[in-house]
Image 1 (cartoon, one colour):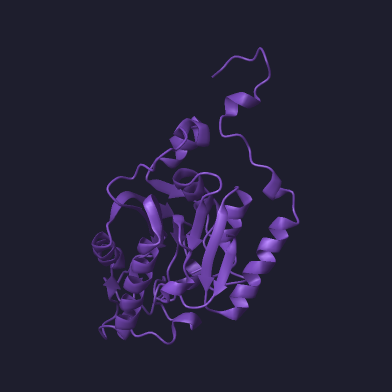
Image 2 (tube, one colour):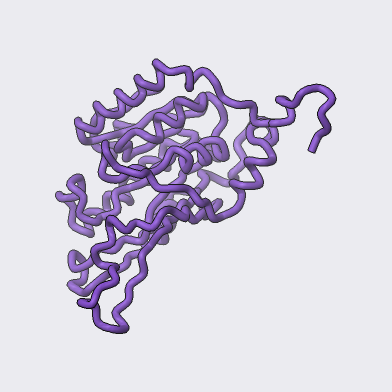
Length: 274
């Protein structure tokens, strides 16, 4: 395993045979360079195609985690000031046709995106009552494949994550800082967001997959945390970047160490248990 395909995620031949966890953030249809060849209908059809491929190759009880926001498509769709399209309900309906069902919903509460807020500003050029909200949150929805979210022959949850981690992560609002600067890719999501999903919804040696690999954060975090990675990236520039990032992990000590999930194991003898 541990491979990234340079290709199109709409092509089912580019997928691994066995996926345990998918973590992905699809294109948002907001005018990025890598979206320039899509109409909105093309975009919706692409999402349906890709997640059908993901579902087809996900094991029974495997998970699909999707990070996406409502799409502010502006005049590209309706010609009005703003057309907020909620794509996750449509993705949910499509995945249900492929026997994948909603398990958990999280809100990623992130930093205010002022640098992307040319349409939300305090200015004497804005008339009264024309006030628009600045979205500083996104969705993370998790789906499971098959009749049950329980995979066979799994270790205990308490052996995989600590009670401290569980207490923080089981809450449905995750306050995680955005990536400070998208130096390598136009849309990067933070490692901590991916790390939580990796630990909650996979175990060591599972295959963690991303059909929109982008900057490679999913693969990097999976590799750092003892999982196998797989993914697809269509842009050669980003494909090469991903391999450089993975090589940096390979050359570091970070991949060789992961803290035991049960913090009690690290306490000195004689110290009381909290």
